[in-house]
Image 1: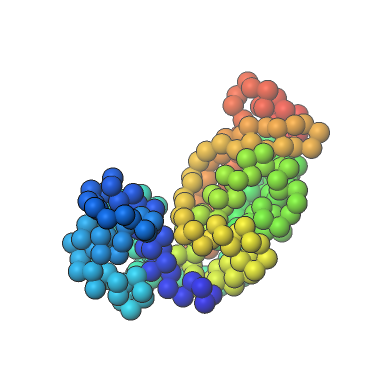
Image 2: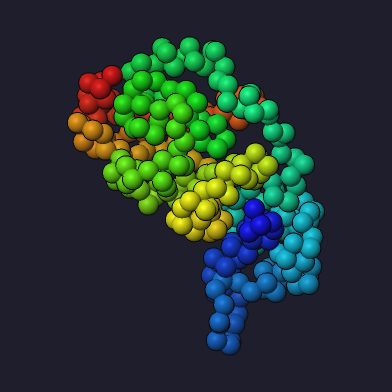
Length: 268
């Protein structure tokens, strides 16, 4: 991906441009013509020379030290997910090795057995590029994207049904891309072709990808419009399955005793 050749610099620039100069303590008597912090202002806040920071952002130094990464993370006010992403970009050697293609798409028998036992829950397993690899029948009934063989990203941005299924589509789309970018930091070689394809196929995906937001949502709540039922409000938890495949198990549920819970039981 030519546009992502300097991912570290692009990410730093995107975070720099979102910082409010006044709240960061930067005194500027001249009329500000830039968004966020200037390079030299960020360098000062991080305790770096402007020329050295410029080398990092321009991609002429792609592996700054741990101390410099920490200084930049503090100056940019990165949250935990963004900090982890920054380290993954600057120190790719620390990222786990990519598994073989076959292993990446094979769900362990024990996990499949659990899914068979969870007939009353929408639950499914996804791979790093958000392919749905296995799931319960109820998952496929609640959301057509949660059916094995589907891809969550492709459904969200390329399937016209997505905006009907997700009443809060704008939030879903933003979180989906930011989550994929967080994964891609550690598995760039594996996901590069998929990301490049999505950038070409969806203008909205490309715009969100180029915003360089990163996100790691492990729990939460979603509203889904289900055929014949209406809108359900479901909570969810995610579980990272141990192993080099980097599979994630999603389990959705309704508030016990709620109308959503009754509707979900009826679907099951």
